[in-house]
Image (cartoon, rainbow, N blue to C red; front, side):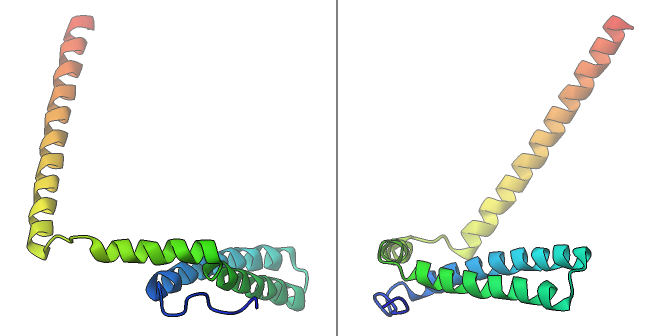
Length: 127
């Protein structure tokens, strides 16, 4: 059957998040379509029902997609691999972020002074 859930309970969060992301993208697209149809002034019925119908079709398509055997198996495997990942602690992330910020600022200062030096040198040579 088309609307059966393939391997129910496996990859639940990955499939749910994927379907939610697809719904957000579809919803934003339908909102833009609604605005375009509203600007064309085709009547309230067309302006609202065309994007709403398209959103329902896309929602059904996303439900079918996340339960399609090959795609669902991929999402189940992806969730299984994410459970195996060794995540850094909060302190390690904070220290790493601080180091990255310091390096970026120092590189910006270094490149800025080098640029200023070359600009001054070439202005002196050419002017």
